[in-house]
Length: 456
Image (tube, rainbow, N blue to C red; front, side, top):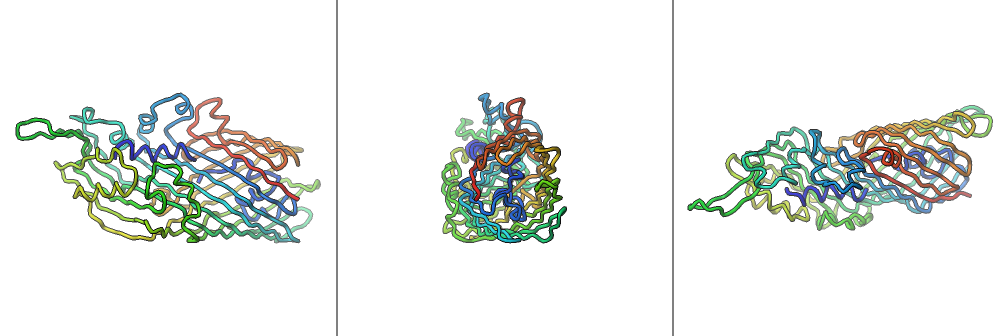
């Protein structure tokens, strides 16, 4: 699959956006709906009796190959992405929290939230395979074949969906020193659009092919795949079935109707101080427990066993201008080297389930330090899952009732170390988890967020 097919999906991730969204502000002592999206038990700690979220937006892109300096420096990304020996991993993620409302009543708290999410990823793409397909021409491969031997699933996937959440939390125990609470969020999921292409256990040889006629005249040249085997999955639903290179197709958040459910479960503990605040605010939550089913009229979910005998060739140049998965399937089927082994119409995609742990400690006066850990509970290489990543963040902050400044320092599974900064003035906030590391050095992550909410 040549440059258009591989890089359109890969670079789509770098141009759009489960990372850690709202790094630093989601554990703010000015507790609101955003905190409850991290842990529903936080609702009982609302700063105001009632809160309205007007609009909140976060975009996050991370990878293990292309740095921020490469992007602004005009480097050839097609060459950089397939350097080194480590497989290519990229995550692009957008999260929108729309109009939402929360309230406290006695020992209870409730919330109704709306939101939308976009996720795109490249998972464990072999660099030799990617470089041969995206960058190498016939001349470079003549006499210099590329041998691929992988025992894992290589995957390019994208999806978008909408959510409506209903949350409830209750104070379980409280005295002058300690406070315990628990909460849950039940989310209705509206699948929008989806696309997945994967090749499991891909083995083969890629080389330049020169075809001659009986007079030894050249009649064709192309990049060919031979002596190859792989298990290929091709699946799509909604707008991404028409084109995976058109970014506007990701805006179909609620197109599939109500066809999924998920839940967040959490617990919270506070060690209170004499000033009406806390010495420590800690929580644990398991989020995104559930799945969504795609039932669009254009659904396709097929698995093929690909077998190209030694000495015979699958012409990879055919994939040069491919714009959708249907075209990929047509080329594979017409080649005669792909055998259908499984076919279905409706398919279920599991949500990116994660475990979140955090603790915010009051160090001195208005100075606080937060530690946050996100541990993924699913394997992003599986075809029926939305991926996420492991993250650890430490955030020192200065926080008053009206103003807050903080700097999150993170270790991300894919992009490594990042450092950012953020500010809150009243109910408005803006920040980034990587802008400092981008400014003072090189980073393979770019992200930013902003939002406005008010309480009464």
